[in-house]
Length: 131
Image (cartoon, rainbow, N blue to C red; front, side, top):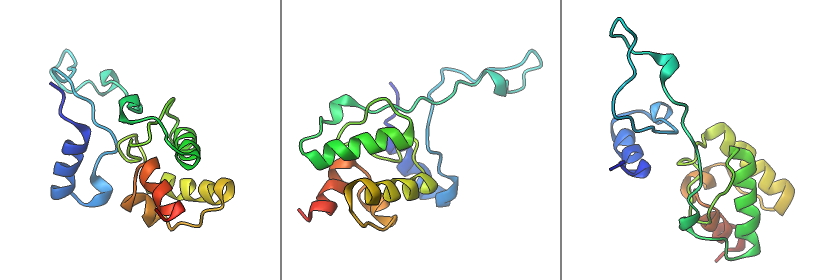
């Protein structure tokens, strides 16, 4: 069974500096090798970032707007209310873009740190509405 990306990320974060923790993880049965037995980097699959619709449909207009912004910024087709920004491939530069778009589209003035502290659309919506 595939390990949960969140658990793998948490494990990596305990052992690596923040900037070295991967944004995506791909589970492989075996590493692709060249005929010489070396890693065939060209044959490695690209990570797929996708939201988990089981993570919840947006429940409020703020969550709906934030799901749309996450989707746009991250290039992910669908984002659930409880999907986490960094699990979907987000990083600090994209977090800054997201905060700028939240300010422009929703009038919310959040620091970039808010995305780290409340990384899902539902959690950010609670910060924006004060709930």
